[in-house]
Image 1 (tube, rainbow, N blue to C red):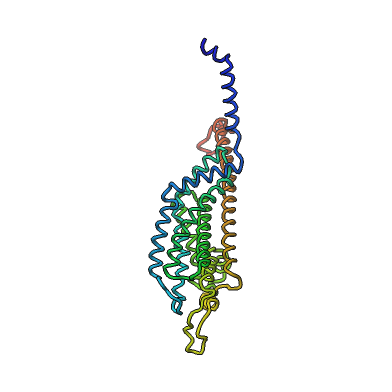
Image 2: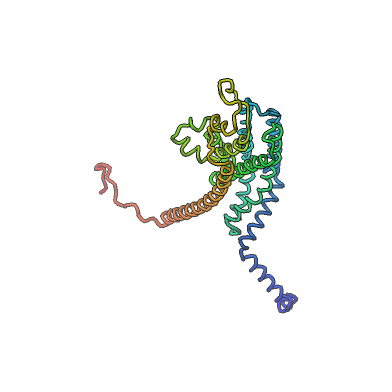
Length: 348
């Protein structure tokens, strides 16, 4: 009697309407900008709480920077410091190579994304945008503090605009490495295999960037064309070296042989490092950021392509399993009942 009275009351009708409205709102998918905002905030919270994502990397970077800066402290501007200033190569290599530390955390984030993607909560593009925006403050922090130690301890170019360019270059490099590892994670979801593949790709990039072997000495098939021109380390090194050497004048070691008493930074870049000086360091920086955009777009393309391939494979496997079930239940052919003659070894 009590339940019948409640169901016939106005309160019950109002409650039913509110429940229907709530269900309708929940079934309605949120907008694109709302998805980006929520995913950015959630990803930022996860990154700030996960020690292995950026905080551990920051501690390792600071330790490496202190050791590296102490080894090359107060290098001066004489001719012998030309080779010593190559420490920028170690900065660009080590600090970017260690960006792979955050790969396991990103793989776990990818697993959450795949589950929520299957439920239709949001798409690949909001996830990529949210991950990119949430990582920017941490990457800026990781680039600023260790680079300041590495830059001022050795006494590199004493101008703050050069220091800011130094930080921005390494910031772009770390974004590139993270973008590369995102692509690897979308193809190789296993953590161990992903780290191995990522290390291998970065190792090849470092080897063919034009530092260990001068660009003019690289074998032209494959290593110089196209690898040398598509690896981001080439533009990072050239930007860092141009930032350091252009405007710098050092004593010339060959002055006693009739040479000029001083040597300019541009001559060092051309004669010693064989770098391209036809364009400025800002072009190198622009190329790096263009590669960041390209890698992020490539990540979205790979993710969407992987989804379509998985869908096709699931449909194919489902159709194959269905055909096998039909054949098992309703076989199309029945065995012959004709007796077999052993003497003539043929069917009668």
